[in-house]
Image (tube, rainbow over all chains, first blue to last red; front, side, top):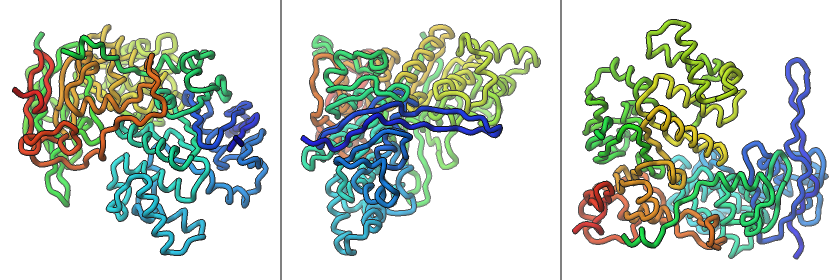
Length: 269
Length: 326
């Protein structure tokens, strides 16, 4: 199968200038390489500050990497000029951590869903409306939410709306930047199920950036572990989690809070 | 051991312009023993933050305690005068909130922020205050107390900021800490670190704690007892081990099942549909009957007609569900 996304030796350096003119450099990404096959999920895990969000922004063509290549469908998007990037962005969409902050509070569900379609400018009014209804159904929102602003939606409904908006322009790749972390456990399960459903029926490809190893293990085909801007370990979920080769992976695994397992004798009581 | 903080039949409502009084907590009762960690588990809208605020009477202006009592060391906090309450809050009962970066003043050194708390509660001399502040910092930042105490909040990491908040909380040697999602904004490694800080404090200082969270896995091996809130009501309460391993209320069961178990040994459940609790977290509570009834998979006729009363499964484990009524 042809790869959908191939990242090669990606580097991103941030330079901080202080009042005195002193330069301080930070290497947020330090030679990151990976590939994603269409219809699969790659989970990128790591502590805060390990560079996972910078990676997400670079792949989304929202941040210019310092060096390296990002091949999306065999075209190097790093070299794209701004107008080409704009054409590319509908195909790579983002869902952020906190839907309360990524949705316009003054708009209702319908207006939020319509915006990407209006900006794209390919559909007429009636087609856009139909598309909005279709998207709502696809993410499991009822049509009565259509006239409500985000403040009147629950956390789970808001994240469904954020996903619907991301799907509006038929993206090939969805970047989920901590998309489940701000939600309650039971709602996380609902949204995780929705993501898997979308993958099964429409062949969506996900880049799932998270610090929740348990959810990463559940959703992903492959896991990449990041530490200080580098991918220190990458492989199929089973392998990385059962036989972690790198210290960072072991530390992350040790930090996952676990539910005690029911022993049969206790359960019968 | 006698309880020293006891909450009795607490009812809290919020007033809104459109719908009048809306109940947020309905008949919540529980007790805490000295040196005990009580985990309060609930999703958004379950009333868990309202509970934290109501205990020390810090509800927003539209919040109203309509009924109930909070007995702390023999005194009813709801009948205390404002001045008395001010001494208890932060002094005897300390609070820690979710977002450490919002709880600290950005342009005051953290040392000063801890000192101010001490100064507000204890009439002590300058040098005495300085000593006490240093002492608190050396408890929380062994080996690095000096550097950290002179920093501004933005120079510290999220975990360090949370430790400063804990320093503020324990400065006056309280007997209870109420922590509302204290680790929610931290990544897992830091989260574990902060939990172990709490555990050491409990052992060293004999602190009791109300630890509020939405993540049941955090409470495993940490809390002594568990209180599960749903829709403003206590649905289950019991020893942490018993509730986590064999939950009895349909909500607690559903909640635990919805957590991916892919990291547990011997399971291979990747990419399977998780048994989620259907529906959205309710924004309004049903007026009658059980608050979990609309989403419950084990509902019966009685569930819609009246609210269930707590049933004792054992001396310490209670469940509010008709399934267990005899």
